[in-house]
Image (cartoon, rainbow, N blue to C red; front, side, top):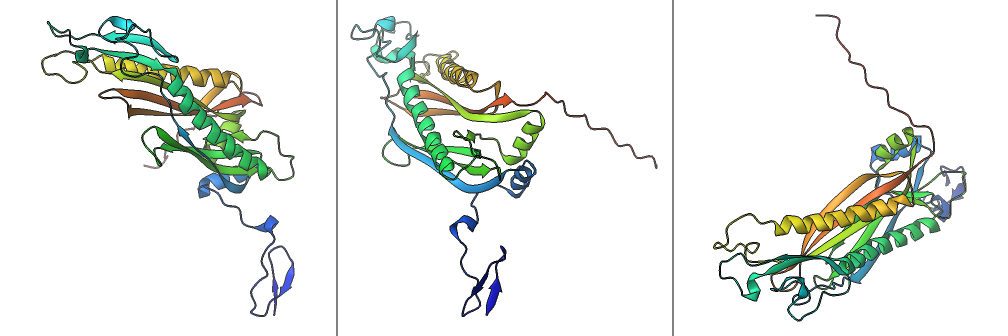
Length: 303
């Protein structure tokens, strides 16, 4: 019995089933919603495959108990001035009237080594995703999502996973470096309408080690406001924001679709690492700036 394939080719199969398609005609996988797929088609983009990049890293910290801060300011318990990669020491002394116990003192210290470890994990995962998209001849990857967690090993072993949908412009030569973005198809269509195109996904990471003093630990005999935690959050976020701004300055005119993630990760004893991660898309201008027309109100004329 003869059957006709969608591409017009014929085949002879005993049971009437169509012959299997060639590899070039296999359906493309994607993580696109129906609306996103339609928006990309209007832009001339077509999905060619769901792509993945992942890496497992041991995240290292350079700051720990006894290395910075301590009951004698930023000199440390052992006379040091801090570990390599740590900066921005802020001491939080014991607030008890007779407080001179070392366990009542605390400090915050920015941990740039920890931030660099986490940042390299994000960068490696995205680089591997981009390499897979390049092997498909893609022009870019849209809708990138990052999943990070201690899926294997202990709390200091992180798994970084980047997923997205590779897209192509049929009939156009693929670039050496596909664009990467966490913007979905619907928002990408609006972005292009404004004369902007995605350049690449950029990330920024900040980290601050917190050794809590008596008040931060919740000691009922040390009443008052706790300003150590907000200060740590601010250090981490400011560093993440500065890193994103620096990365975007080499790729485009600005950043859109920035997603923020704050984490509190266990460290030594009662201490923890306050982390902030910012992920966004650096954009570049390819056309004149356009201002969308304001919608007009529709007023019924009949009562």
